[in-house]
Image 1 (cartoon, one colour):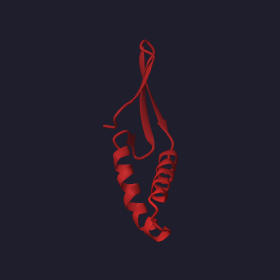
Image 2: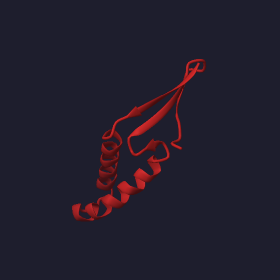
Image 3: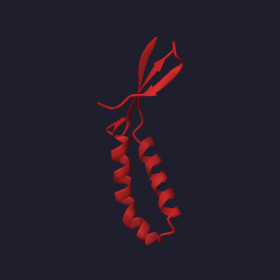
Image 4: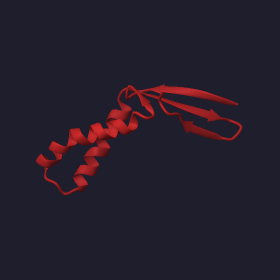
Length: 77
């Protein structure tokens, strides 16, 4: 049996992207002012990639296949 589940959480993706970008920028060795200048650019770029799977930055749909024991993230259309 296959079925789809749509999950909605307006803050999870935003928070995860924020944490990931901050972690990556800190690892560059740039000073705080330089990191702040790059932050919005990097966050926007990562958000654009995530839009392939997340609708409006908060809806994610997965398809569960109980026959094969799989769970697949579906692309947002």
